[in-house]
Picture 1 (cartoon, rainbow, N blue to C red):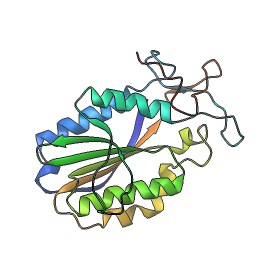
Picture 2 (tube, rainbow, N blue to C red; picture 1 turned 90 degrees about the vertical axis):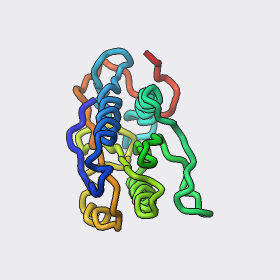
Picture 3 (tube, rainbow, N blue to C red; picture 1 turned 45 degrees about the vertical axis):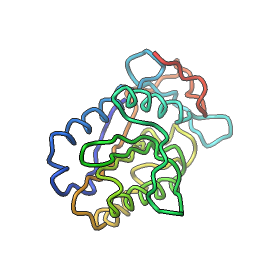
Length: 202
């Protein structure tokens, strides 16, 4: 899988310049890039079919889960409940890493554009309140988006609102959006299942 863009919303304080963050960030990006389809192929090839019709297009959760497996091999934890909003629990975080400086979080977008806004707001509040020291959202590019579940969140639709998340008060933290894309397209590969089944572990 390709990372075609990294949008840095915030990069402030000592943690953003630390060796620890550089190491964690490098490992996160490596886990994203290692996601392949079909499993074991060594590259990410998408079946080029629109997801606008029921039963067509490609799912997202199976490839997210592959990334989570790779992160857990690096010491991350998956599906973690973190008290970011107090009594109003915003839901589990896809993955967290307990760094020396604090908690690093990663969300991989599998829902619609509203879900992307909720994920970014959740991560932003975590940074504002000091519950997180770094946060990353992984979203598809427009080129990948058109072959996935219809209306899935994507970077181009988030772009008009980036200044909002760049303006949050945070003295020590990192906030990034990682934009992903396929390596190739082919009718000779299977569609990615819309769910968690069908993803073989290498």
